[in-house]
Each structure stands twice: as structure tokens, then as C-alpha cells.
Image (cartoon, rainbow, N blue to C red; front, side):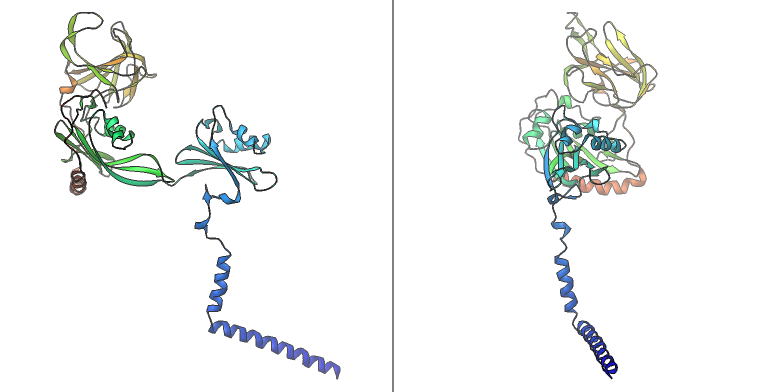
Length: 433
């Protein structure tokens, strides 16, 4: 009898539990807010990654972080030893990094950060080195020692700017709160069309270009989309366009700004003596022809080949000093005199490309100071290269002409709408950019 009574009791408990489960499921199916609320509670326990203080892919708040700059004659081991990393671990780290980053390339003045554990040891968990403003190398000392490279996100901001030349191009840019690096970009674009040794006060420029930022900090000038450099009353437009093969700069007629020759063998310097049939020689102290153009610059300044060609002479002579002579084709030959030294590998028979460095400014031979005497032959006769109408490169391809015209007109309208103060003084030649 007692056994039957126990069985009834167990059966009753089982039925009650089963009924309770059915009721619970029915209530939840009829009230979806219950599930939503439980989900919300769970979500509040999981931190939003966007709210975390992330640095180099790590949660910075999980570590004690120490940041600094590499000191002179400071090595990786010098830093890590201070944060309780042993010599064997450092040796293993260096070996693991070999195919990714050579620790001997760590340079004075660059930024680094050490991420240490928040425990009694205070040991370094990660070391991060920035070889430049956009890249970083992470040396991870946790578990298996590993090394990897990362790239910071670069923000590109497109900007419009203008300025009237009042001194040099560099100084004008600085006066207009622009990066001097913009002068390098403009001089490269106009290297074939404008002689920046002859710019004048009152010349002006308008430009649409990109600036690059990392962590809201300016790191450099990017692409120039379009520019107008008005020189001696003549507008020189430059429009960036990709014809499907490569990107180049063209004028408003679709002609390439590239020419067979650069205007000068130096990027920067000062024109001190032009081509003339009669000049008083500063060393020989007599009047004679000067069939070249002298550009003064600091000793060691790189000298570029102004065009593609083949070196036909690279040697020393009593009057020319160290010099290089290049035949470009059956019509044109150029020569570069008074080098402090000829670049290694430059010798007769070597092919060079336009803008290749062939030597360095000096004062060897018959010279009173560091400069390069640039000489230019056309059909066997020396001529004034600044007066020559140099042959252009290829224009925009015909099948891309319509697309170019559309982009060019939009860019030209944007350039022309940039305000400029043209009341500045005009007419005075400037020495250099």
C-alpha cells in the first residue's frame, strides 16, 4: 500500500513540473518582450568595441602604457630590459622579427610605446615602434613571441589654396600657411614648362590638392588634382588625368606637361650666369663666350640628367673638372661640369633616364665656387636651352579625349573660382624657388 502511495506522489510531482514548463513556454511565446529584456541585459554585460580605448589593435586600458621617443644610441634591448624582459626573450624576439623588421633600423627620434601588464611584475607585454607616421611594428611578448606590421588609417582632406609670389615659392607658401612640401610637388609638375629660377613677384598660383592626416595630425601633402601657375602673365594649367595606362599631368588642350628635357639639372639652386657670347671670366680675368648656364647650389646637391639618353663621357678634365656628357638622340646632347664627384656607376655607355642623379655639385676644374655649368647642344652646336622650344611628350589618347575634356572643365572651373589677390608688386625677377 505504501509503495502505491509513493508512486502516486512521484507521478503528481512529474505532472506538476511538466505543466509548469508548458506554462513557462506559453507565456514566453505570448510575451516576446521577456526575451528581448533578457537579451538587453546580456548585451549590457558586453562592452561596445567602439567605446574601448584601442591602440594598435590592443585595448590600451588593459595595460600600463609608457610612451617616448628613441634616444640617440638607444637600442631595443636598452628599452625592454627596463621593463623586466630578459635577454633570452629579447634574443628570441629579434630572431622572430628578422623577416618582418630589422631591429637595427630603429632610429633616433622615432616614437615608441611599451604596454606593461597590470600586475606585480609590471613586465612588458608589447613593444610598438613607429618607423614613420603611418606604419607601426608590434613586438608581442605574450605567450608565443611574435612580430607583425600594421598600417594607420590615413585621412585624406582635399584643399584649395592660392598665393601671389612675393619672394620665393617656399616663402610664399609658408606666408599662406601652406606646407613647403607643396613647392616640391609643384616644381615636379612644372619641371618641363616653368623655369623656377626666373619666377617674378606678381606671379601667382592656384591649386587643388590633398593633405594627409593621421590621428588628426598633418603628415604631408598628397596628390595635386589641378593647378594653375600664372607666370609673367601667362597661365600654365596642369590637370591630373589617368588615361588607363598611367596618371600624368596635361594642359587644357590635353598636351602632356612632360617634355623631352627638364628646364634645369637641379631641383633647387640659384641661376648665377646665363648663356652669352661675351662674359668676363671670373678666373681667367678676360672676356670670352660662356656657352652654358651656371646654377649655384650647396656642395653635394644632386645633379639630374635632364632627359633620357646614353652617357658618352664621365671623366675629369683640367677646365671642366669632373663632368658627364649625355647623348639624348641624333639632335640633342647635354653636359654637366664642375661636379664634386660623379655618381657611382655613371660611365660611358650607361643608359640614364630623365631625372636620374648623375653626380653632385662641386667646384672642380676652372670654378670659383660650387655650381653646375649646364651645356646644351642641338645638331652639334651649343645653344641656350632656356630659349629652346623643347619637344613635348604624348598627348591624351584620342579614345580618352571626351572623358578628359569633361574632367578638365570641372577642374578648371574649380581653379578659376579660387580667389586670389593680384594687386601684389610685379616685375622683379627672383633667384630661385
